[in-house]
Amino acid sequence: MRVRGHGQAGVEEADLDLQDEFPHVGSESGGTHPAILPSAGAEARRTLTSVTPEPSTRTAAPAGYAERLRAPWWMWPTALGVGGLLAAEIWMGYDGLRAWVPFAILLPVSLLGPWWLGRIRVAVTAGELQVDDARLPIGVIAEVVALDADGKREVLGVGAHPLAFVIQRPWIGGAVQVVLDDPADPTPFWVISTRHPVELATALVTAKRAAASS
Image (cartoon, rainbow, N blue to C red; front, top):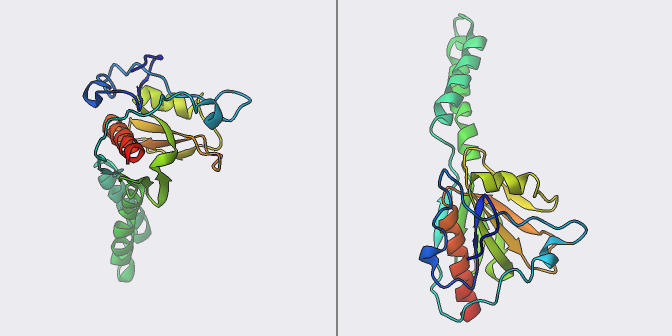
């Protein structure tokens, strides 16, 4: 595996041992590999087509992966408290319907916020990466980079690209950058938040190898 700087771990298709590829990603000390940044004046997908070597000829079974980007536990009582405060402001000590209708409506509605924010599901199958209702065929993936918190900030900051597809949840530190090699798609890469960047990256590489060998 190549060492290329601070903040992340790269996942290469030609690596032979997935168990030893990412020993430091996600630790508090940070990983050792940088995000892939688009070069100025050139399409990112074209400058990165030769980054990943040819896939290994070893046959690997597709690695299934599924994760929901749920809201953290503290967001639920916070939302409930905000809903209760708004209901109390409307109530203001009145009798009748105004005494209970605001609470009956606003308390359940306030819980829709955390549920909506945590609805995104990320999954890897034998043929595609699924992120909510977006689908990415495994065959167009050129490289996968597992990002820790520092790497995620880098790729969404100095490494940001206006055409990148980003699903970002601020309460989740890790992410995966999926670099594309698809002449029909101007999107240079995807950046997807995940609590398990190494596991997701490994599942993508394994599925890519299996698709190449089939």
